[in-house]
Length: 253
Image 1: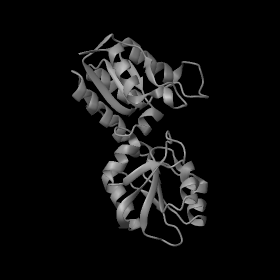
Image 2: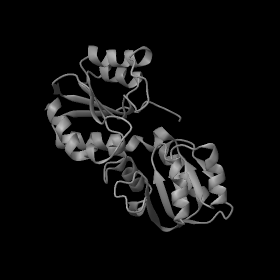
Image 3: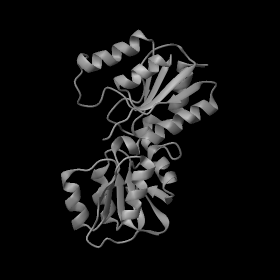
């Protein structure tokens, strides 16, 4: 068992949300039970995840995508009302950590992707910004773009989009940002990096990849952000006397 206030304090110390400006409040978003014996982790605090947490008799849900995003409506009705009502009626705490989880050096989404695909010499993509959400690194030896796309699809269990540049060059250096990080592709290309990996793709991304001669891989927002929250939950289970269950609500996007 762990007290909710103690878990919140531990996560604040571990993830340091105050160090990065975000689009959503990080931490305890919905207050529930004062004590926790079971935590459900997942990517997004959807109704499906909430219902699974209720079935599991969990006292807390820990996610990457929570509520109260910048520019969203303040009104609590419809889908938002149903979600929040379900949490309150079942006395379930909702913890959410967005960018602080993306950038954590060992448990974060980007760190987990680097470990999964054996990316070395990891460093911030944005030069001079130690809190860069996007990262860069290298492979020990050059790899083929199509082969890497296949590897991404297999390991992430999601069909990867690969935009091949005119040169179809081998990949030694790579930049990446989990989730919706396609906007960083130009920064990567300007630094002469061979490839950029993220979750989503925009219309203009194809033209940037072709005209700036950089491989681009979109492997799914959800798929590239499964592993940080899973690693965080496993860490909590090891460091505290509490049961943690990761539930992957399928999302093809």
